[in-house]
Length: 366
Image 1 (cartoon, rainbow, N blue to C red):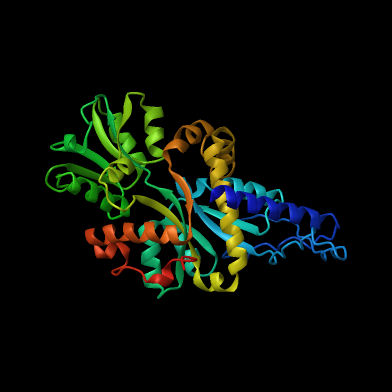
Image 2: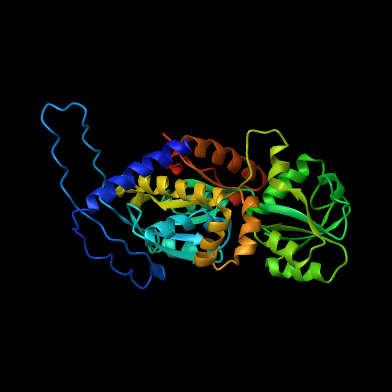
C-alpha cells in the first residue's frame, strides 16, 4: 500500500511540476496570526488549464484534476512524535508538496493542545490516549488522522545483565517517567500479564523529566530505568555500560493479543477535516512518503531531524531504528487504535477521557 501511495504521490508531483511550466506564480502564503505557529513554510502555487486531448485519440487519458492547495498548520512533538514529518517539511520548504505547511514543534503535548483548541493549529501530534481525551472533551471536535509511532519505551539496565525478562524485575527498584500517561498504563498491562504487580512487586521511582532519571543513573554503579526514545539512546551514549534490557513494544507483542502498543498519533480539527477532505487526503499521502523516507534513509533523515528538531545527528541516527515510526490510517488505523484504547481503558477509564470514542473519531475509516 505504501508503494502504491508513493507512486500516486509521484504522479501528483509530476503533474504539479508540469503545471508550473506556465510560470504563473501566486503570491506566497501570508504569515500566520500571532496565535499560530512561529515558523511558516511558503511555496509557490501555479494555475493552468489542462491541454485539450487530441481528437479521436483514445490513448491520451485526461489527467486527474487536483484540488486547490491548502495551507495546513501542523504541530509536532520534539521526538518520535515529530521525526516522521521532517522530509515533508523539507519538501514543502523547497516547493515540492501540493499543500503548503506551517509547522510548530513543542516539547510536550501541553504546548500543542492549547494552540489546537484555540484554533491556531489544524493538526497536532499527541499521545494516542490523549487523542481520545481531546475527542471526548470537545464532543467530537477532533478526530484521529493517522498513527505516527508505535511503542518507544525501553527498560534499561546499567552495570549488569540481571534483567532478561519481565519477571526479573521482581523486587527491583526502577526509575521511570510518564506517571499517569499511556506509558504507565501500557507498562502496567505488560507487567500484570506477566504475573507482576507493578505496585507491590517493583519499586518504581517516578520522575517528571527524563533528564532527572539520567542524573540518578549517572550517580550509581547499577540501576534500572524505563525511558522513551530518544532518551534511551542518550542514556546509552552518556553511559556506555547502559544496555537495553527489555523492549516494551516486543513484550506487548509477545502477549499474543490482537492489540498493539502505540505511542503517538496525529489528530485533526473536525471542522477542518470536513472543509478540506481532498487536501487532507493528499497530506496523508505526503506524510506517509515522508515517514518511509525517514525509515529508509537514516543518515539523511538524521540531518533533517537536526534541522527541524535540533537533535544531534549521531543521537537521531542511533535512535531512529528504535522509534517505530509508522503512518497508518483508514480502517487499519481504526482497528489498531480501537484495540489499544480498549486495553488502556481497562487499566483506567480516565486515561481515554472516561469513555471509548465513537466511530466518528476515526477519520477515513469507513
